[in-house]
Length: 400
Ligand code: SF4
Ligand code: SF4
Image (tube, rainbow, N blue to C red; front, side, top):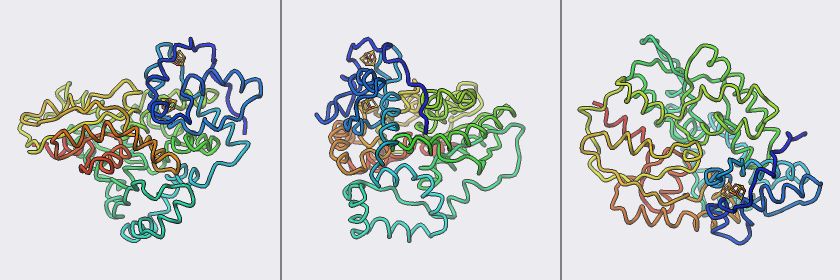
């Protein structure tokens, strides 16, 4: 399929700050870093040269975008170049498995969770998945019971004068619906009726990262139509997943620049902690009188949340709960970057990247790790042994 006009590589001043901040470039010599792989080699790609296998090592974590002082969408260069490469040579099977994780999660509703979790996690299945490109040592999330999944998406009776729309994201829908239910509880406490439309599909980010651009665009168009529907009604669309928020708010603009309709409704999307913070600031949600957890909490800010300009909202909100003790680890990327750290040849890189965070978590004395990103939570538990939760779950449990 045709790819959009690329971004202008001449916007890059070659300062190399992005390379200093790239976790993958710091963990392996196989990756040449964002400046070379992104804008510098783009000039050759525009002339029709280059089929750069090093492109496959970018995790799409966005730390280059965060660091770039010139506002270059560095990761988008790499993702679009990877998509062009995938058009010429088919990605490995593991990329299809992770790219279509949303579709696989939809199909999973036909089977009981305990059955799926057994089938996917026994050593024989892990050996088969390993041969398909998913490293047998990598942590796989467990499917949630079907009843919990249905409870999240069920229609709720209207009780309040205003409404909000929940975009749970694939991780919450399939693996941790209780995070979505915790967000529903917080929003209902602030007197919102919460709608969970069935029409939304996977945001498309796993497909983008897998190089499956056409499939990602198809999903973006479906979500774009849904965002337009809710924007026309003046309703906020709230997601507890930072990667979904980033994709719906900003990535559609950078990855599908010719689809103007897709970027028009990005502003209607809110990351959940930002929305909750605004409710607290406006006096519409109070945590006074709540019961804080007794253990120390250790927080990790996901890269995609920082890429949206957020990052420390959850600690700010939680520190307002009297008696709650929280330590911000501030130890960089966890290394999983969605599904990157699950793949063969990338698992070790992901674990090397996450080593500082794992040490910080182990040395924190905390009993519970916190992060807004579902796959970060999986990786944090894998690397440190600490259980992990979404900050919204702690907030919800604190409610008076
Ligand atoms: S997205 Fe992450 S891994 Fe990829 S080039 Fe940027 S900083 Fe490096
Ligand atoms: S930080 Fe931005 S301007 Fe500097 S080398 Fe990287 S892409 Fe170019």
